[in-house]
Length: 193
Length: 384
Image (tube, rainbow over all chains, first blue to last red; front, side):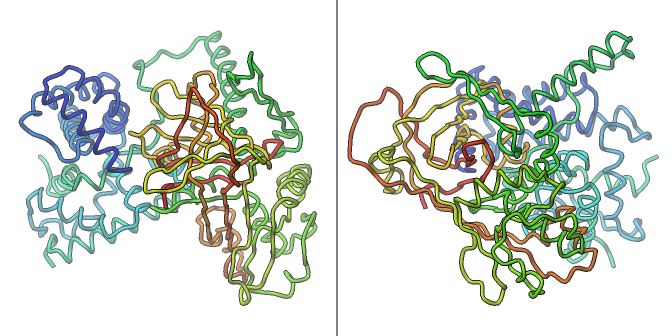
């Protein structure tokens, strides 16, 4: 099935390379709902969501070609997610507002070392690689729940409803995963001991 | 001033954007809780409130009717099809008595949740769920919790075995908790599923094989040779099927009459991951979509055969978790099913104006004559 999605993505990318305006329409049809959901979960504001998603389409149009993303869906999600996070920060500064972000930031504090000052600064790319390695070691269900929460910023309630779990069970699972991820990061040298 | 703690948590958040793309291929955002259209609204005036209440009731009514389509259980349930001209159905119409609908709602909701979980947990393999086993397992827990007064044994091969054996493997013998799911529902299930399919209760020490067998049969002459499909797999052809297409993409819903009732097959658009259909709320979510009027089609598909071996005690469903917390001595409650769809081929040939191929992963639901669900599943590998 992933192969079919890749085939469909390749067809859309071909449209970009042909500089056909259908490229944007196909992207909207295929991923528009997903991108808006992701932006909405982070921003919680209709106008910002539309701006963010439109910017993403424009970014795709400008970047492809020459770029040809291997995983088009992830590539689009990354753009919209980064823009949404930037927008939240610019909008709220010290207030940390917007959608699910304040709650997610609180949960993320579990990942910090006991004394955060001693945490080794690592490149963002390296941290991404460490997190990827951890997620690869997980079952599909655990990985999906983790990403729904921390990548797509979905609420605990929505995840629980989809996964036929109680909200408490989702929270417990995510807590365990954050703890495991922290241990994994320590093993990989993210935190100084 | 940004603290180091803030910098770190933001770094985590940003780093997640850069994880390997393939890890995201089968993940979507959870269902949006809020409609995106429209901004902040003013507080509604009185007439708007009443309009909203009326609209909500209408939506609940319609949605409830659609949900019962796949997971409905109720003695008074009737699924009526509107028969348009020339025998082509243009839409489903469901009617169910209020009492029957109300009596079976809790069980239905639970079955829907459980189906979603069982099929989702199947991972890359085919998935199969039978609600009968779920009810039976719950009823057995009631019994073992000492609540036998709330427990009606409608049909059971050897009830005494339950009392004698502390470590049981339980199949889909139908025991229903009176009042919990509606006694009429129990009767309906018994007369339908239990009579038609084979159930056993056996101690775990002696259990090795399949405990519930579901065989989907077509009427004689209903299946013809269909040539070879992908992978050289022999296909068969069902001349009489109805197909509905979803308005926004190429997802198809196919209906086939089988000896035991009806078989519904959902064939997702090639760009849609079948798993994502489940993530969005199970098979019943499909029926809330905008379907075009039905058309007659011939259906070409491979035989399929799927098994499921599910452990309910560790399933995570609240009902089972609570039972576990009561200190029951059961070590496991197992639902082990085999479903076979391999019709006998008949000689014959004909030409069809439309042939639909089930040549990729699909979802299915088997309903008996009254629309009671017997099984639901996801075939991820149709050619194996």
